[in-house]
Image (cartoon, rainbow, N blue to C red; front, side, top):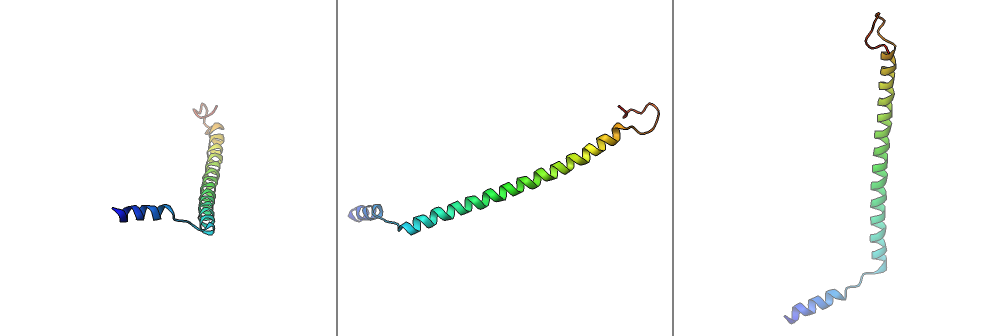
Length: 77
């Protein structure tokens, strides 16, 4: 049991160099930044695609509102 206590005591005294700590924090910050940029660019692409789709649908609605040319057309507003 003395060996276990010595092991726990030595584990409690582990020291990390400040360079390691700064490296870990810097790495985590880089990963978060890259993921945020990736998510932002994906969302922008989806918003652009939806905008183009809305424009196409609006053009179809505008065309349908003009009617089909037949007297009493159901689509004509």
